[in-house]
Amino acid sequence: MVDTTEDVWTAFRQRLYDYIRARSRSSQDAEDILQDVFEKVHRRIGTLEETANLAAWLYRVTHNTIVDHYRKKQPSPSPQEPATAVEADVATAEQSIAPFLHDLIDALPAPYRDALTLTELEGLTQQEMGQQLGLSTSGAKSRVQRGRAMVRDQLLNCCHIELDQRRHVIDYQPTGSEPWPDDCSCAPQAAP
Image 1: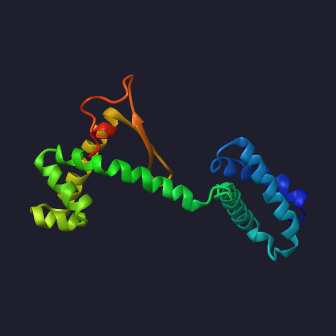
Image 2: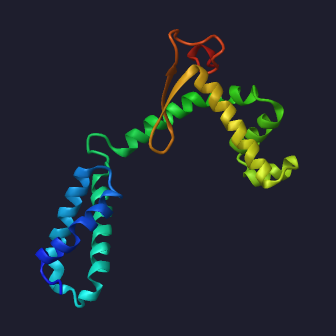
């Protein structure tokens, strides 16, 4: 019968460590989480009514501790940098590159240009675009994906794009040794 924290530690330490390590980013995180688990076990082992459920209870506590550990580590906006300021910077970067995306879309072959114009610029769903162009839903999705890939490739040929966690543009600048390639549509001199 397992009824003390020391008995639980001896019986489950390695199995719980292996479980945690498979779900953590480093061995140091795994050790920290394991210590937190056994701290919780020590405080609550007296509340366990049946030792038959001990393993299930330990794994539930361990799972919840892993989730809590990484939830605490997620960055939150600091008082000096409110989220609205970061969002404003993202909006500014996206707005400044948006006109060049129109040029890149216009340069695509007609099937892809039409698909992206209808979905990205006019706001149709991919299904609606497919109906309008006589495509199946999967065909419409495929065309949009290929068009986006073409635009992305064109853009990345001349510009380095920096994205945030949500894949929003936060900055862009020229690639290569020269300031901007002559045919780069996102170059400042190409701006209307």
